[in-house]
Structures are given as structure tokens and as C-alpha cells.
Image (cartoon, rainbow, N blue to C red; front, side):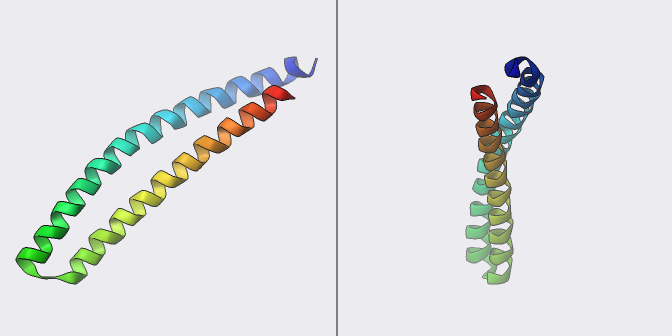
Length: 89
């Protein structure tokens, strides 16, 4: 009887998990491309302009994008754990 009551919640969580997985995958690809450009710009900035402040700003942008990717992966793991817990209940 409990599974019948919890089943709609499980379905909604599965749909949310799939959406989060899609967003994290797409953002992971964009994050990789962004890191490639950031690395190229950092090298060019050091070689051409010798401006460390701009390199630090690019590094901060890269770290911020990694934090967003990590948060998305964390949400994905939490949703997976919630679904597994509800399924066992």
C-alpha cells in the first residue's frame, strides 16, 4: 500500500533526475570548452600583455564554473539517493 502512495513522488523525482542529468551533461561539455578557452586566454594574456590581474580574473571565472558544475553533480547524486530511498520504503 505504501508503494502505491509513494509511486507518484518517485515518478516526479525520476523526471527531475533526468532533467538534472541532461543539464549537468550539457553544462559539463560547455565547462570543458570554457576551460579550453580560459587556458588559451591565460597563456595569451601572460605572453602578450604580462597582466597577472586579468589572468587571476580568468582563473576566478574558471573556478566559479567548476563550482556550478560540482553543485549540479551534487544535486544529481542527492536525487538519485532520494529515489533509491523511496523505492526501498
